[in-house]
Image (cartoon, rainbow, N blue to C red; front, side, top):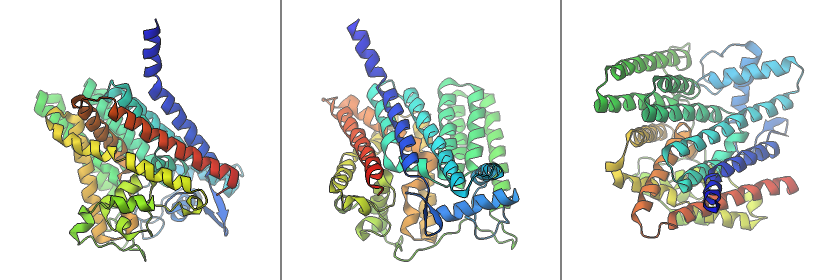
Amino acid sequence: MENKQEKYVVKIIPLIILSIGIIARLAYTDYFKEEVYKNYTVFQYTHDSFPHTEYIQFVASHLSLPSPEKGLEFPQQPLYYISSGVLYRLFEYFSFSHASIMAILVWYSSFFSIGTLVLGYFLARKISKLVWVQSFFTGVLAFTPAFLYQAGMIGNDPLCTFLASLAFFFLVKYIQENQLKNLVFTLCFAVLAFFTKVSAGIIILAILLALILKYYKEKQKIILKAIYFVFLIGFLCLGISFYRAYIPTTREFRFVESYSYDGQQTDPTRLSYFLSFNFQELLKEGQSFVYGNKNVSRTLPTFLYGSFFFGEYTYDNFTKTYPFMKILMQFIMTVGIILPLGFIINFFYVKKWGIIDYISVFGIAINLLLTISFLYKYPSVCNSDFRYFCPLFLAVLFLSCMGLSRLNEKIKFKFILPVLGFVLISSELCWVVGRIAIRIFTNI
């Protein structure tokens, strides 16, 4: 009887982590939402909040999309702005103040951030029966600050991450259960994700690859029909999107509009930019700040690794007063090296790969190539942030956790990796609690 109780307690650990993660997002959203600064509405740890807000207000005022010209976050996919604009208009009709509506829109993002976390928990249960893998997967998604920050954003990243995660989740279900309804759900959410952020189109490509691999394995005609159907839908979505969002009235094709900001210029023509990993410099800084240490911000692997945990921001405003927070950040990035380790180690177990592994690698590789091409055109540090991988957060964690799980089967002391995983998510939770506490008691 005691044995059964112990097993039950162990099995609910991932659920406990999920619950704490949801509470952390609710607390973060409550204490880090919008503020008024010099007559502007600003947000803690968000990206381009002013142009995002302008786009939302335009949709709310006109109940239509703006002309696809430069400005108003041009070019961007419209789904987030349509839904947020309708919300804005609705609450404006009921005489809510601008500040109140902005707070509602932040909670709107928080809802999607929580949804992504819940999906991560259920995905972890589907990909592994090991409780420590489920706990680690859920914990990293729950407590890593860069993921948590999506709960307090005005922007399209939270919605895109949620919809892409839904698509990835149902794609995994389709691969494992072979039910057509899961493929339909996958395609629907992938299309919605694509109309939220163009990089989520990678999910549609991943669906095609999964179906091709499945057909190669099973030789079923219904899969071949599904390939044609997905290809047709994908082509239609691309056509509509490019025509409406990326071809302005001047008839000039514009795929992206960005800038090379002063003080952020990078040099992607140097091979060292793509191959240098200045881990010691990153630890010294404790953060990947766009205007920070050049040995961190001017090398892609270093900046990606740092921004994976803490984004592209500076934390000097409170780490100078509370140095233990910086020490904790340095510790997190030290222990966190197990994540890229698991990702790399997984490539040594190709013989054990299934369709999910292949589509995850494919999606991340395409995303990386798009990011690199973007950096060549707009060589700026802020364009190398890990948030550009937001449609593939679950795929990145999947590959890392599977690599660690497969490695754990081979090593003699099987407690080492689970313990390191527990230490990482525990230290991240401590940092999140500390950050919220500092905010509550000092308003920093």
